[in-house]
Image (tube, rainbow, N blue to C red; front, side, top):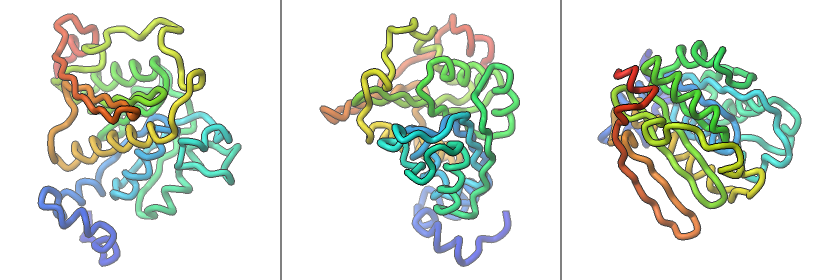
Length: 252
């Protein structure tokens, strides 16, 4: 990357002042490519904070359109954008936050046929959906390609976050199979407090920034959970499963 402009030095001043970051860390962010799968409740804070942080390229995967029922929690969108593609809406907001960030729109739904090619072009993947099928799809594809990722989940007043890097336990080490249909109700059925995806997505964005800059300790082999009603945060350690059908075949 070329030398920072005066405007960029001002924009990223608080990062550059961090002893753990400096210009080196900010350059790493500006050169990074992050894929965000889902531009909804979790994806909103992820995209906005990564854009503000100066992540150079953000890929956005979402085949849905903005609906008025999204606006209670999906803060990357606004009332004026109801009815348009979520990836288009998100790109407009990102351009307002940081015009230096390049956005690559993928207005599609993730499938086993397209996930491999999509994630291959990025350094880090963030899973930000409410679909167990997508979570397992992202886990399996990222492990196979040796691609680090961060996964988030929310429901009602609770959230959870974990991160994977090659060689560490994957999502299937913790939860070998998806829950049976109906075992875990969706937020559409039981609701979700609007700030919960904000808290969770912000934690996911933090994990991405930490991985890109080599700062701090990631949530690898650890599941962070929180309950906003009690404000209890817990970190549950877990190890590699010797019989894991995914990372047992791909040891990084």
